[in-house]
Length: 260
Image (cartoon, rainbow, N blue to C red; front, side, top):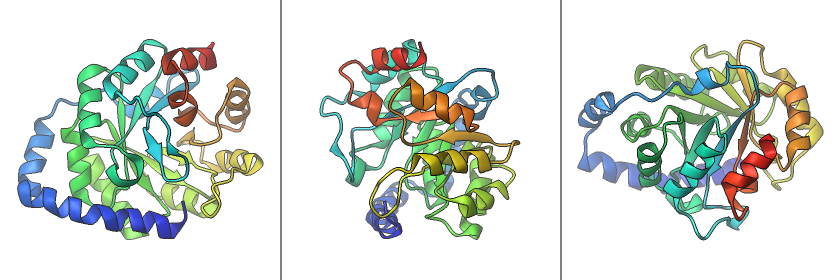
C-alpha cells in the first residue's frame, strides 16, 4: 500500500474511533483493559529455538480482494493452533480488510496462543481496545507514524503489558524502530508500496539489517518451505503467513505441511 492509501485507511477509521470513544471514554476503557486477563507474551515465543509461524486470520485485502469467503475466525484459529502455529495475527480493520474487533475477541476465547491485533493503529485508544479484547501485541507501522507518535504508542503498549511488532519497509524505518527499546519485534514487509510487488533479494537484505537484539519477522513473500528456509538464513526468527494459509482448503493442514 502506498503512503496515501495508509492515510486514507486511517481517515476512514477516525469516525469509528470517535464513535467508540463517545460510547466508552478512554478512562473507562483503560480500566476494563487492565482487568482483562493477560495472555502469554508474544515476544517470548520467538526467543525459543525453532522457526515460529504467526498464522494470520485475514478475510480480504485492498490489493487481493476477498481472500477467504468462508471466514470463521474461531474455527480457523482452532485448526491453526492444533497444527503448530506459534501465534496468531488477527485483522481487525473493517473497511479495507473486512476485519472486526469481534474476530479478536472470538479468537481470544477459542485459543491459548499469543495474539497480535493487526490494524492501522494511530491512537492510544486502539491499544487499550487491543488489551481488553485479548491481544498480546499490537502492530505499529513505521511508514504511518512520525517518530514522536511511534514512541508514544510504543510506550502506551508497554504500559498495558503488550508487546509491539514494528513494521518496516526499508532500512531507515528499521533504524527508527530499533531506536525504541520497547519494540522487541521488527517485521520486514518488502512489498513495494506503489505496485505491491515483492523484491525477494531486498527482503533478505532488510532482514539482515534488523539488529541482533531484536526479533526479526518476515512479513511477506512466504509461499512454501523453501521461502521459510531462505528467510531464516537471512535472520528471520518469525514468519507471518496470511494469504498462503487463508487460500488453502484446510489452513491447518497447509500450516502443518509448511512446518513438516
